[in-house]
Length: 252
Image 1 (cartoon, rainbow, N blue to C red):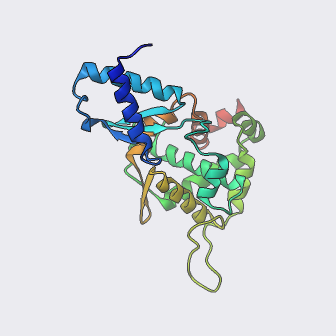
Image 2 (cartoon, helix red, strand yellow):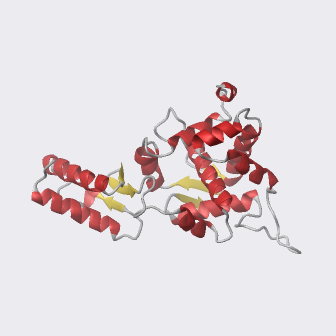
């Protein structure tokens, strides 16, 4: 595959501009002088796509803005488990991190249904999210082949179920009526800690009790999360846990 030198230069300039944003990884195409020139735009974007593919990145475009996702197992631009754990909370174990991943998948399935490319919800309340997680965990408790399911998805659902079931909904500080907002002492705290992590990644906005998705989150869902290389199967499985097909799924 060959490209014009000018197109490659512009493509590398785009990549440099994005990477200089310290992890924000976004670029507004509408501000580029060549964007309204269909022939030039086509080659530049093709060259850009070729470059980032070699780097193991996934391009996510939404409303004329490009976002880059590191995809799965990208040691340069992605985060290791230890880095994610540190950003969530230094006190977290691997099990707490995987429970946070479970919470993120539930957030996704609450906003997106498999048959719909766009979310139909403007926001979800924290209380509704906790109830949704409760429902998914209850479904795990009655799953007839949970160990087999965990092995298939390389994800220990039994331990996540047990951890969540053991946690109180909320916990207050000793001798005070103040809620413990973050950490791992309650379901509420664990959800808040996960949401703060997502906010730091510019994936959600939380205002009072309302959780809204950012344009970056929506772009990643549009382009990366549904990429076959990404663990979309887990999200489908989680969504199926409380659907009318859950019993059929459990018996297969």
